[in-house]
Image 1 (tube, rainbow, N blue to C red):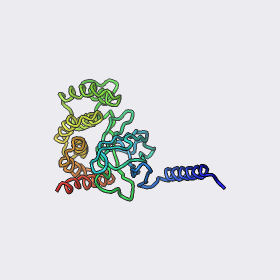
Image 2: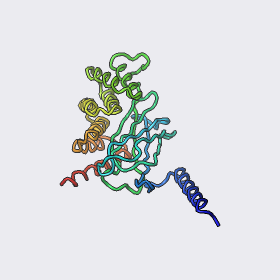
Image 3: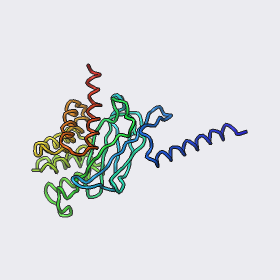
Image 4: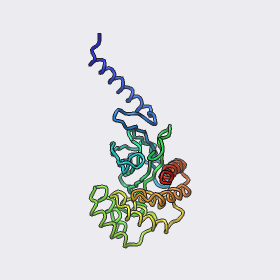
Length: 270
């Protein structure tokens, strides 16, 4: 007769085997955990802005709020790397308002702030998106010898990624006094989001929208900055504007889900 301890050990081994097999197979969209939180799988693709897939990009998460805008109490940080085809996947996300921060060598950082089943129940399939990074050469054709605004932008990115927030903010403020095109303005906005300065980020993204009203990136940035400030009306409008400006179907579906989710806040408030 097996002892209770060996029986429990056998259950644990079987549970771990199932978890490993699910992870290798892509796994379910939703998994119930003993901690009381229902976890989800999220996935996506990282690409070069205007180009093909990007491998080796680092995706890092942070959380702002939990389900139904409650205080967040689960694990906040997860990381993943994009594969050769740009695809990535993370298992363990819980419902809430999330920050996805994407970085890669020789590319400018990109930050998305988005609800993931924050107000609505999770879908039966994994949450999915497509995000893109701008190469540093988009703002500084020869990074090693960059000067002026290009140098300030690259310095601000390095400082933000190194978590030197104060120095990054000071560099961005100097950058705000220069003349920048839409690409550089969006890059500055993303750097401001890395250091969680929503007001400064929104300032850069709104200038980018004025410089290029047909590009989706300024509107996506405005929405992310608005979500950090809990300005839901602006976020809905900007998510919708970004959706209308992009031809990327995966991004379109994610933005549609974000709009539906945030609209529930209005419904509850009535």
